[in-house]
Image (cartoon, rainbow, N blue to C red; front, side, top):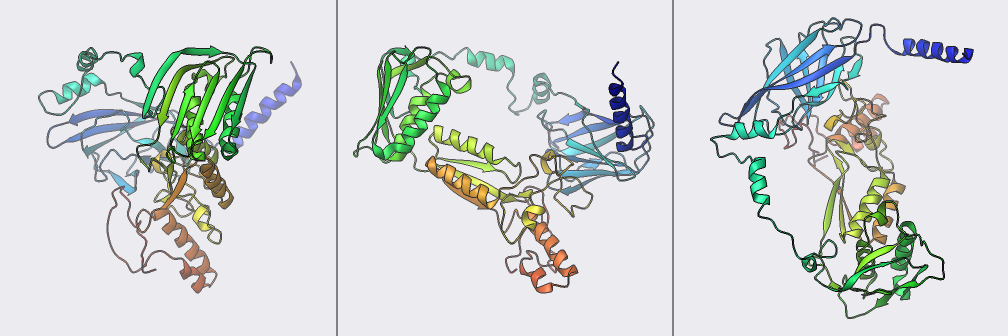
Length: 484
């Protein structure tokens, strides 16, 4: 065998031997429901069991951190030597006189919480085991008891709590019936009026010719690009040509359009570029799903006459990237889908307790601190890993991230080209823990440098304020002092 193979194996063993601490323990976890009450007082009791699957002993004094929004922040540890402490938001810690664990030895942590346990998404998640020596370990081997529909039906028996069984749903579904084909709208959202005028068209034209008024250049280019991505002719250019025509008709509503398809022509009429784009997307919505996935060699669409205009002026979609970050490319994809479904307002939540997501030149701390989430004991360098976003801030794809000023300008331009208005949201004075902690870090940095004026310039809290409160999302100290 190649001697270089053995060298590589030896190097890997040596490398990982130095990388992993001696006696490193792999912790496995399981969760089970012990009691579940749907009658007053509504409460449930559950147990988290940790097992040492490593080769070394876990020293006493470890802690367990986890995320959940489904147990009370006043939940009670059933072991008097341990405490279940709420930190901020959905982040908790289990601490106290935790014992040492030898290999294959287990230890159970039981708690009681107000509220009935109703969904399999409720158990604690994002488990982080903090070893006594300060090393952290994210628990990836985690089994949770599954609550079945039969369990819930039994739980709700004799009460007015609405739990629907499979048998009930089956009986209700038997009353359903298919709609006539002519009553099914050609796409969603349903147009104001439509009429099918002939059989379905199936053709593979040699070319697709898009003609249009000079006013609708962007709609024409979008249609041509999309068609070229999803359609490739299986016949030569000598085959028939499908003509798609865009016409400007001033009498149509601002966002309205008409669409008429026949076996050899598609006619889209609109008064504005917005209406033209909606008409184009409506034609594309007539095409089969394979057009969007793998592409097609044949265009299949109904012959239909459509008149359409939106019933509502404000057709919005809300995206919260403060709590769960999404990349710029994902935002672009969402804007494309909004345009396809004729939504015109993008409500963009960029800052909250759990993250600050937009670059502000001159205040780099907002993103250096507020746009990063990961595990630490004191939340001094970045935010805690809310919503189980991961212990490593550099690998926390939903917890860490922000948009540069250039990114945001691109998003605005991309949205404008699709007739979408962007409403950015920065939640103040409440919901502002990320910004507050970022500016407190800035304050400490400047004070240590002896620059008190600069330190106070953007401080968001009054250090003398002793108010005690808890937000709806279970945060403390998350309100900006407007007097600052």
